[in-house]
Length: 301
Image (cartoon, rainbow, N blue to C red; front, side, top):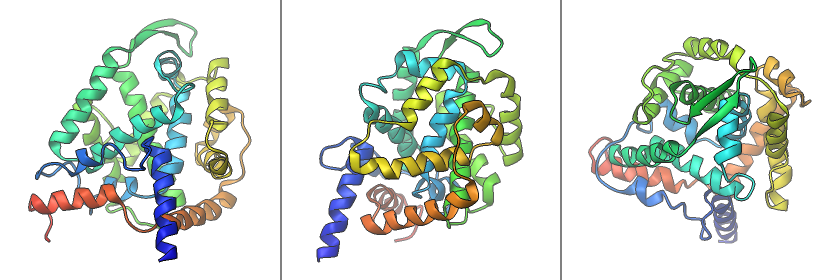
């Protein structure tokens, strides 16, 4: 009983940190649970496995670092995000989109995409390209959407490959192909459909990414994110694990030294497994999605 009480307490604190909800219940839980129709994925699909794993804690930090390398994406965050005043609020918004798109029904995904698209319509401005030219942008521009997509996808994939013991059904190609569905409702239709295409797309962006003083400021903020004191040591390890899993050329651009990947891989993998054990095996979001899929007749009872 004592262990169960401790797990429940740790689970509530963990989910409160990620969701911003005082009671630890993510406000999007009801969105995922609602209805009796399927969504994009089932429990046997690669995105479900990858995004249900604790390696996403590393992947999320890595995605932020990756996004900051594109001056258009960086400017959108710096000028229109509330990350400094409400860092956990911005985090919970990103987690909501990822979670609903992975585990929600078609209606839920459509609703979430509408929310994101409405937000994108309010974000525009100008930025200086890597070549030194001034360019106008909108958050809904296809090139910016594509960069954010591949930065997210590559980050969660590499984090899982490095810091999880769970095999990906169908491998990396399956994850890339299936997760391509996620950005269709956001208006992005042409995206990588295999690991090789993902790598090529990242290569194609090479002359569009850069590190400026503003980049360094945001990366410093990511490194020193204002989290509760007890979370900071764990977050420091997650940050270094995210940095170490990035391509060497990106690490050189960022200019921060990290511990070697061969050292971090077993340490971080075991830490994430311990965290999973500490808060217990239950996953309210996945459980709610599975119950909905049962009602829809997609999986057996």
